[in-house]
Image 1 (cartoon, rainbow, N blue to C red):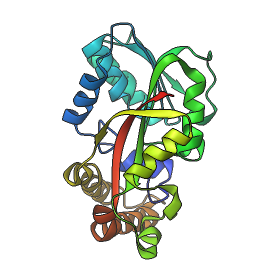
Image 2: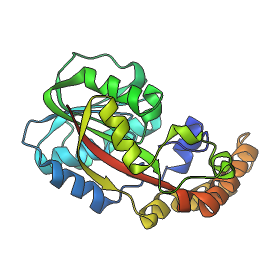
Image 3: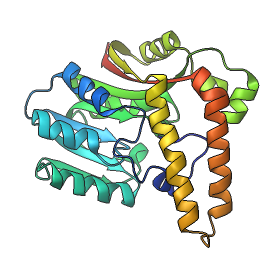
Length: 251
């Protein structure tokens, strides 16, 4: 999940100690699996899969199988290691590709997920259109998306480096999904403390990286990113920005 215009390398550094690359905790990822209650053999396509924790864990817990797609070699290497750790490497495949341009057999998956990366389709509506392409009839999509918990002032949008209309309210998010042809079935939302665990833990990781790599050419930009990320979360993000995974089905 990328905020503040984070480059891919910065993303890889900031989340190098993360297993789940979004504000879901282990408990909430487990809850999402319990809600969906996948049958063995369910096929999942996970777009912008990061380190593949969702796919590998659910393969271990429910016997699902599928494909994770991501552009980061670093994250995909971690995903393959994790799949081996959980003993599910024969059930999941990880593909290096731009998730927004991924090609596969249409209508070949029971579940299509994109957890916190709707930038691959230029926003929620465009990403849902991409996801629908791979979804079997009566399948479901799992989409992670930010929403405004309260209307942000212009200075909040500037600090968070996001246009106000990139996101909407919680009910507005449901309305956008409905306008794209999907019914909201369920949701699992992050709480302020789970946001903190996702965001604040990156600060220590980045600080350590800056100390350990003083001669890296990206140090000035990374230091600036850390300062902006920390301030924007404390000043605005915690008060205005929410995040959740929405379980949808074509209507």
